Amino acid sequence: MAFITNAILSASLTNWIGKLLELLYNGIGNFGWTVVVFSILLKLVLSPLDVWQRVSMRKQQKKMAALKPKLEKLERQYGRNPDLLKQKQFELQRNEKINIFSSCIPLIVTMVVFFVVFAGFRALVTYENEVLVEDLDAKYVEYIVDYNYNQLAPEKQAEVSADWENASYNQKWSKLKEFCNAKENDAFVNLDGGFIEYDALKEKDLVAFNILNEKLCEVYEANLDKVGWLWVKNVFKSDIGTTVIPNYDSFISTGVGGIGADESDTIMHTKYNNLVSSSMAKFNKEDTWDFKKWNGYFILPILSLLTSFLSTFIMQKNQVQQTVGTKEQIEQQQKTTKMMTYMMPLMLAVFSMLYSAAFAIYYFISNVLSTLTTLVINFILKQKEKKEEINSGVVVISDKK
Image 1 (cartoon, one colour):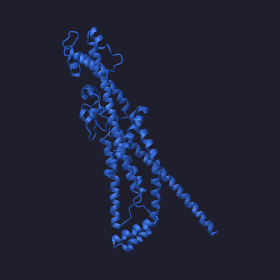
Image 2 (cartoon, one colour):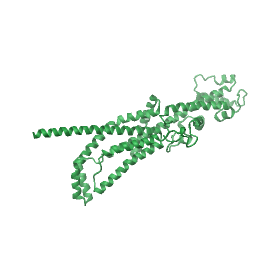
Image 3 (tube, one colour):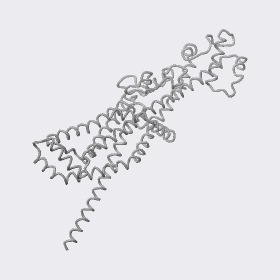
Image 4 (cartoon, one colour):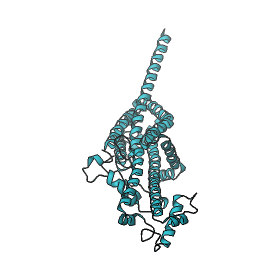
C-alpha cells in the first residue's frame, strides 16, 4: 500500500490538483471558498464511481442474503474442518459471482483520493506562502530603494538613476546598493554607513522604520482577506487555537503543521521574521487564552469527525460482510473490519486538526456530500427494487389466472 501511495504522489496527478486549485483560487479570490468549490467538483467527477460502488454493493448484499441458507448448510456439514469449509464457501460464492472483497473498494478509493488530494493541498499551501513572502519582499525592496534614493543629493540621484527608466525594483536595488556602498564616505550620502537596510533603518530612522512595517503589515492583511474563511482567519493554518501568522520555524518546517517552504524557492532581501514581524504583532495571540486571536476554534475538526462517523455508519449498513470461515472467524473478521472502519474517521479528524484548515474544509464538505450521495442512491435503489417486486408479483398472479 505504501508503494502504491508513493507512486501516486510522485505522479503528475498531485501537480494537476495543485494547478487546478490555483486556477480556481485566482478566479474565486478566496481560498476557503475555492476549497468548497473544488470539493464539489471532485465529488461530481467521482460520482459515477460512487454510483457504481453503491449499486454493486447492493447487488452483492442481495446475493449474500439469498445465499445465507446454503452457507449455513455448509457450516453445519464442514464446521469441524475449517480449511475445507473455507474452500467450499469460496467455491459457492465464486459460482454465484459474489465478490466478497467489493466492500473494500470504497475504503481503498477513499484512501487513494485522500493521499493525492492531501499532497496537492500541501504543495499549494507551500507555494502560496512562498508567493506571499515574495510579495512582502517586493514591498520591502520598493520601500528601501526609495528610501535610500531619497538620501542622495540631487546630483547623485541623477547619476544613479540615469538608466532606471525600464529597470525593475530588484535591478534598482542592486545598482543603488552597489553605488551607496562604494560611496559610503562620500558627503553626498546623507546617512553614514552606506546602503540602509532593515536593521540599520531601525537604528537610524525609527519613523521610516515604522512606516515600512505598516506597509508590510498592509500586504499581509490584504492576503488574510483572501485566505480567511468564516471563523478561520488563515486557512493555510489549522482550525485550532494556533497563531495566525507562522513564525520562521513553522514556515520552513516540513513536519506536522509546518508550511514546508523552501528558502531557495523564495526571494528574500531580508529575514523572514523581518517581513512578518509587524503582522505577527498585530494578528498573533499574546498568550494561550487570547481567544480573539486564535486562528480557529476546533470547529472544522469536530464537524469533520461527526460527519465522517455519520458517513461511515451509513456506508457500513450497506456493505457486504466477510462470510468465509467458521462462525468465530467471521465474527473476528467483522470486528476487525468495524474497528478499521471507525479508526479511519478518527485518523482523518486528527489530520484535519494538525494540518491546514483548507484540508479540513475539503474533508468536511466531502463527508457531507458522500452522506447525501449515499442516501440519495440508496433511496433510488430501494424505490427501484420495490417497483421490481411489484412488477414481479403482477406477473405471477397473471400466470396463475
